[in-house]
Length: 294
Image 1 (cartoon, rainbow, N blue to C red):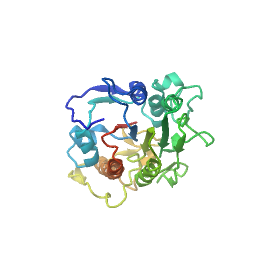
Image 2 (cartoon, rainbow, N blue to C red):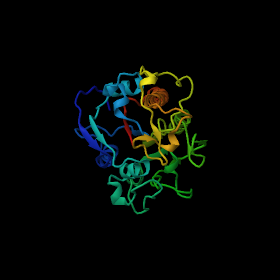
Image 3 (cartoon, rainbow, N blue to C red):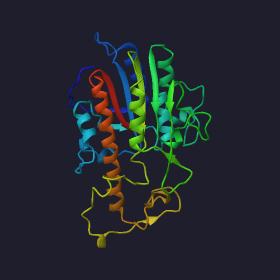
Image 4 (cartoon, helix red, strand yellow):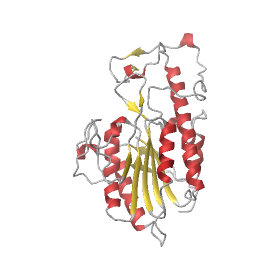
């Protein structure tokens, strides 16, 4: 697919994306065009559109995302099927609403009989399928609390080797490790068509960006004039700070926004590294690259 710059902005939801990807890889784009070399689906955990430069955000959080957007069709309204990772990914991978496949919350398993995008493509025998995921709730079958989203993938790397700051029983893989694993997989791609899903955990909280991103952004609000947030007893963020998100004694909302933006900048730097590799392989113009959030 040739690189193009579109101004048109449309609306899409996760349930329509699954069928679209299947048709593109198997049948091509219509009008005599060949199918794309491959489809690379990049999903970013808890990423807000209104904190990205391509959607008008004032801070320089997302130079790589913004450059990709300039070469892409940008959706003005894009709706996730759910507000948590497990159901959202179950919906995206099946093309159905999470309730239809009975995945209404995290740690609810996708039924084996649910047909996924990866299964549709694998059954053709001509499309290689692989995934690198970095959220604890997307673990494969055979692991405690598995999600079932590995259905149809011939390669599924769900390594999560770092403990969350405030939850010792939750594990994740930071963006650097995710990009390393993604590039490792892509190096094994030969001449076949492929569908590759990579799921970045950052900027999911707690917001602990590594150096040199920590401290990059600083609110101009006067700390003395800021209202302090309460710490909620549960993981909800309504009217306060979720208990697993607390950073020391910090209670100012602006400080959490600063750290969140720094996490986005960290992810963006790793996205840049991944896109650079894709371009070095000569795939940037020949693959369908999709970036979305869960």
